[in-house]
Image (cartoon, rainbow, N blue to C red; front, side, top):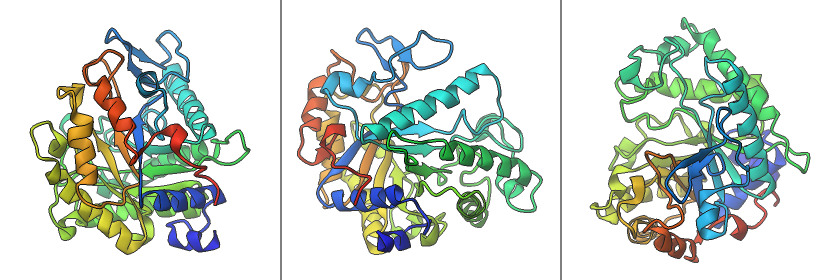
Length: 364
């Protein structure tokens, strides 16, 4: 255990956090964990209508999950977001969002699942959208030390730290989180993305974030994930925004475009090989941190596109995360959907692990 902690961005990580890293690393040699964003937070009923654990809607069991409804099993990885937790909005709706996220995260941990958090952070200078097009205000340099919004940013990190320390499982332990801030930075759609700051300022922002959470705020239940989108074809281009090995535990890639129905799975597979090989060389975890085919227009996408992309090269990937299901855009099938049988076939692959198939990930 002591050795594993020397590998991590946080040498003082909790035992459970270090065990999670170690076990994910071992499992990746032969298996991949299946994940779903908002797995127990929102989804679709068989008639295509939406259900969601939100304050203004009828209450829903926190054990409800589209993946479980179709396959009989929960996903192994649960995706969440700090979007409505560390932001600039207040009120009962946001209080509820924070409370339900905490409950769902703890429940996922209690049943043996892995929790990962992204952060669609509102622009901290304009207090507007995280999308550049909706709030085109440069912010990266302004939230770095010396910038006009640096204190604003530190306050947001304090909210994340307080929340992280409130996540206590049934075993009395802090729940480990894979925290994946400032993703898809190689695209230009977010305010932290390409063209809206220098690569060096982006790297400094990521480094400051880790340093402040770990060293100043004493958060020790985070593994740090970093994942650009798909805009690379070489290791050099993949690492263009990389903050450095000492700040990152998991390297990944978000990739929707290369996994569209009409694209050969080898396109995504070759990029995933760059990610996975780098992880092996640096003793990191690797993952396909976001993907999916919107509304599953190809009924056998899971076995013929996703599984082939994951298996056409020998890859050591810890997990694949499919995006959240909403009425307008869903990524896993609901009961009765034409893709249902193929999704079950995907689940039955010996390579893919769902919730009840994983060993105890939090013990050595």
